[in-house]
Length: 126
Image (tube, rainbow, N blue to C red; front, side):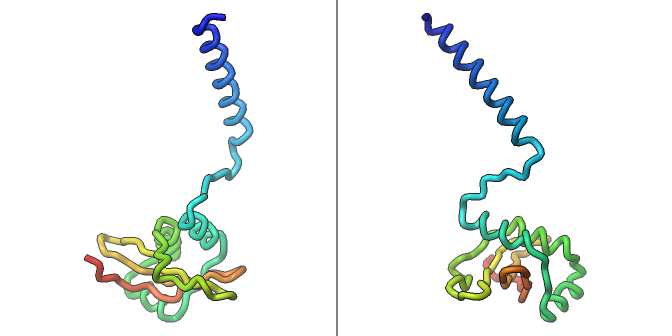
């Protein structure tokens, strides 16, 4: 069998496999969250949020809403060196992101069924 025929069979089977794979995975919430940052953020954003008094004051002063806070957490980067992950019950993560060209740090307490945003501060990394 010539090389061109083998290449044709290979590409035909490969494209058929891709079409079947897209058909079966269409509509499913399939994702490839293998990194520690992606797994942590996915775990945090899958739970309901609660805000501490300090955070509520910051939100009202800065005119933020819950969707903005959720997006800051979802698209933020977890700083594991500042986070307290050795705690057994509820781990505390520091999530860094920027909003309106200013760097923010969110301290998030991640428990089994609830996430509490403990504090939001402007960081001085610039």
